[in-house]
Length: 453
Ligand code: PHE
Image 1: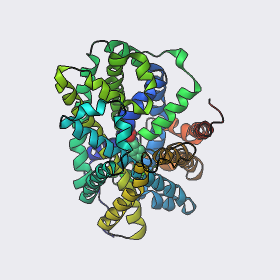
Image 2: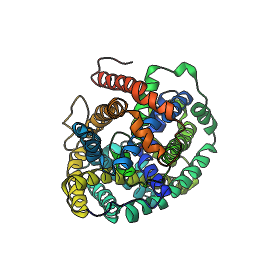
Image 3: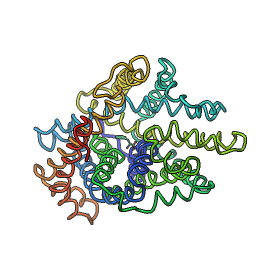
Image 4: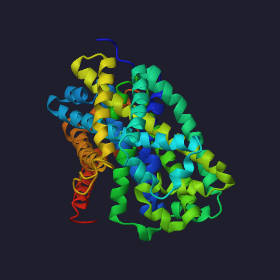
């Protein structure tokens, strides 16, 4: 077998993994969750979860990848032959997520092009978004372009594709985020929003805040999808795992934090607290274009800020889609001795086809509803609320009780100290499994409409 490709160094790994972690979840989901679940208090809970649970699961995955040098299915198999199915679950989730992620990536592309070509006033019109995603053809065309772009990077390989693209895109993304956040915070009336976002109000605290933050944290850090295992398998033995994971956490949380600072103050400035709190998932595609539209300057401001914003979202979505595709491609290549190129093209075609029903689910197929959800929302629910917590739970139980935390600890210590070792062992064995079971139960009950915590 040819020698496995590797990242050229720790920086390449950190930027690629951060590229995976920073995605639609940070820019689109985090701000609306923060707005909905009490602003500052959500932020605080989220931060605590990232440095405890998020850290634990991420370092376990990266270490499993580096120790075995394999993608998820074979990595679990190598550690214990009866547990390959955990890897199968992870790669399967990545495949499903990728199918609908491409559809949303296509929407972002459409918005970016609208803002860049001056056709953005339309996007701010009442009903534009629903009418657009309800179309049969246009969304699929943009989706195709997004899939092809992702495929192109994967075909470039680990070093020349993923690493090179991440090294350029991630710094651009951070600079854009900072610039837009500063602009947004200086709008008249924005301070109220900044205060709401930053000052914790303990009255808003409830069990739901913790559960929402926890689900978001796993999703945002790209955990339980086999991605960190795959990227970990491209790491060199001399790289410092704990430090790398720390840097990824800072990147991911930093961009989510900035996204809140870009969006919440701007929405407060334009429409006050109610608009921000009630927007929900439509915040990015419906509320924000309306906010941009009010920026004055005869539409110029709106075009500039809107283009910058949607470019940022596109870059973030693209690097995440790349990681999802890589996890699936690597799994297939390791398992079936297929050429990387063939596997990548086959998978791109498959995710594209599977994405079509998700896209049409808002238009011609909108009569299909399962548990009251459209096809895209159903896929999102199955992966985020069911498969992801199950895979995370199994991973923790596997590490905590089957191969034992010391297997991971030894791998980490090959190249550095392990400062959070104690925390890791306790969280992986006891605390994480208990909490994950709670999120799982709550999200399923919530979905079935049986109970709301
Ligand atoms: N972490 C990405 C985000 O925040 C989404 C993602 C989830 C990407 C799982 C890959 C795997 O949007």
